[in-house]
Image (tube, rainbow, N blue to C red; front, side, top):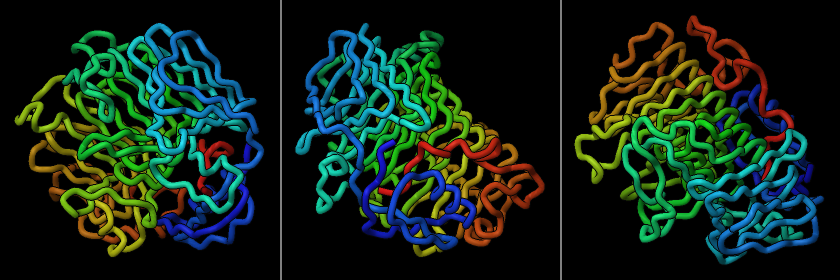
Length: 435
């Protein structure tokens, strides 16, 4: 497995001592200083051990193709995988964007990706600045565009995915309610996506991993998105299930759900970095750990389109910061709005001004919360009393809540909640927190 070569700058995160120890042990890296309870060492560094040969790819892939691990694969602009074609990527392969381009990989409807890494050799999409053997260059969000999967599973609006040309129908996603739920866009497993994302215009961005109308025949498992310029993961419609997800230091939301997504997320952790870039709307912070909309106001002002956006989240932890001043850099831990619905099972949210928020344009009664813990510097749950569950804590201090309850221990509110890691550490070996 390729390693990070050098340590430059410190990033402070809100993490318990147990979290920090876990994450540091999950990384292969050199030259990192000791951590304290609420610090995580993050570096800007070059990878070492990657191949010298570079193969540039552009345009549309029209035949079954394999990207081998003996080369670094460079995307020159947008690269599409055509319908009926499968792109296979070997374990341990590095993929980068070409400098000066918005380089993204788009798997069109009817196409498939077979990107299966391993714990020891994950597939890595990353910045060209981490693969240039030049210690004076620094990776930044947006160096790589992102990965977009498009499918035919149900969505409440069939439209062009964000970030792509609206004049070309091949970039549309989604099918009708009750059709193509098992649509298959392939496999992403043991994959890291680093320094991705691109803001073309307001509300028109490429995320780290974007799924549009992706069906539950698709496998998404053990995927980390780090230092993205927009959301880490965004799901527009579709039924795809995903497991073992890590969102680290995103500019905007960690997990974002829209347009009738009804899949299940199992084992996921969202971790913010106060020193990363932060999304704003009208000059005010608007990034959330989790964000959910049924649809945009322009699509239906009553937010009644079907299927309703209603993901199920099992075993999820969302970690913000350890003081109210830094929390002002963000919006909420989880924001449910615009007619959206959600089911939360064994979920921990802490380190934001507000933990779980239901906006006035949705109804908390449509959602379900079980065995979950929320905390906020201002309020744990908004509106107060909107969640009726004896296992939901309501203490106001996120720092006390986080510091007093180590990572793998049962939280002290009467349940057996351990959030993302109720079944143990699934991040060991393949997750990277040093950049």
